[in-house]
Amino acid sequence: MAAPPVIARTATYHHARVGRTELDKLLRVVGEGAAAGTVAVKCTVGSAQLQEDTLDDLITVRAALPHVSDRTRWLELTLERDEGAARYVSIEFKDGVVTVTVRSGDPIWTHGQAHRLGEILEEAHGATAPGQYRQRMIMLAVMLPMLGVSGGLILSLPSYAQDDAPIAFSRYAILAMGAYTLGMLVREWLRQRSRRAVLKVTSEVEWGSAWSRLTNTDRIAFASAVIAGLTLIATAAALI
Image (cartoon, rainbow, N blue to C red):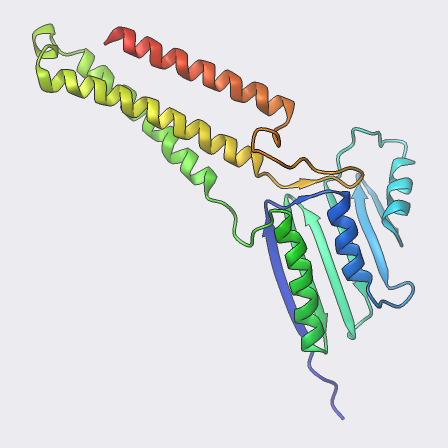
């Protein structure tokens, strides 16, 4: 009798914010009904490839490495259940992306496990398609110098031409468009930074508003950008 075909499902999640609570949930699903010795957690630190049966053991072994300190970031992590062709599950965290792979000869089990793991990652803000924030930021960043050039051309006109009503209206319209574009650029930057993928193995991730999810470095950069933008707008308004 021929063996049943192996059913496989793979999904990729972006922007997932995963901390210890989310990892414990994922491990409970991965290890449910698993035979002893078939579930492992893995990571690589420098040239050291580590593998342990539990996440706590992996954290302890990793922390004992001579070149690892409390500030050494977790750049990648894999949760794996390997029962050969019968059942296989892999959750890989790497480069800000979570890749889930489920395989078995039972389609109900395969789709059920993939769905349950997907629900946990979606609750952690995971999305199967990356946000288009970077593309929008590039577009807005290109618009700012274009508006600056347009404003410069108008200001370079002879004084009698600048007093013309349509020209005066254009100056204020360009200033308003510049302020709006700068505001949108800052908004997209804030959204992108607050929705970055996060992997915290030994602690919890921050939730709440976009501002509360920023790091202190990001908050300083954001405040500096806002001050610089307001200064630029005020200078342009003074020239008009």
